[in-house]
Length: 486
Image (cartoon, rainbow, N blue to C red; front, side, top):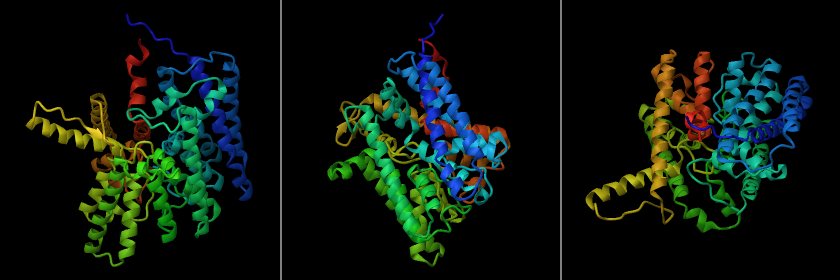
């Protein structure tokens, strides 16, 4: 009989309790908007009190227990549970305010926020109270850089080491360390994240957006989330606001380590990074191709064709999901190209989701090297990234991830089809939620929502969002029988 591994559940409980307290504090940040707009403070206050009380009780119960470091199993378990637990408690403002009365819908909307998917079941967003819209945007912002990374920066003060949390949060591709200590790395990443958010708020506020819309859209942009305060997303805003959002979506889809180097004038490290160059050129080339296609198709305004295309390409490739045009109404060869971008995603170390640029780069290079090895079987031809050889284990990890990604996407499509969803819509919804993008194709296109899905399908989509946000393996490891054995 296999021996059960002893997991330090007291550590798991302690961290989870602390995260609930943090979530309660973020909830309370909605109160100024409720007061300013003359709205009821009861839903947010009650939600924060319940969340904070349960977190506080758990913290007090575990405060003197087990101050050892988090191991791999505890790390994976904490990360997997975090996104589920904070989403469960994050439903409370929606339920107590009556803006979403169905629990399935409330959970779908909340986990869509925390996973930065941006898929919504709301058919009229603008009628929601401002403080609820703010909380909806806040779920994006918390999930963007990852509440786990925030926790890693604070855990040492609680007597708990946090390295395994960051490993579990970003499996497969190891994040570059900006500082020898993982805590300092997390603090620097959050500093950059907060700084960019504040700059975007100011730039949007200078335009036609009021302060509230500037905050909510900045939260959604930097998190690559896509929740807007308007029913038409970004369509109704000026060209200035759209260009500002384009710039910050692109920055959010870039490895945050490169932002650190850029801010410290280490320009060579930024522009010599091969993943960044691939990211830039994919955006540039696809934008030019589609812009020309729209002009040939008959769009008379060159600037608008360019702006709509650039916005759409950056929004989809960074998995943000904001919309300025109905790309599904474009010629089929153009929206199929947009659909292909949904399988790529942003850079590793960014707030974007998806397969990630670096994985595609390594897959392409390995395939090319395999062709060379077939011609020269005795030659030793390593795969290189940034002029350094990549280990065979890393290549195998990337190939395994890509295969698993395709299998999960296919399984999601089949499950949705069995639940009565049309095949094209099932394809679009599966990749849009697994890639944490939001809009897809079919009846979940850029001007549609997810309200019509049956409840069981919404739970399937919620699971796909969670898998995509944690890059498959964290969740798959936790639910595997091997995780619970030595």
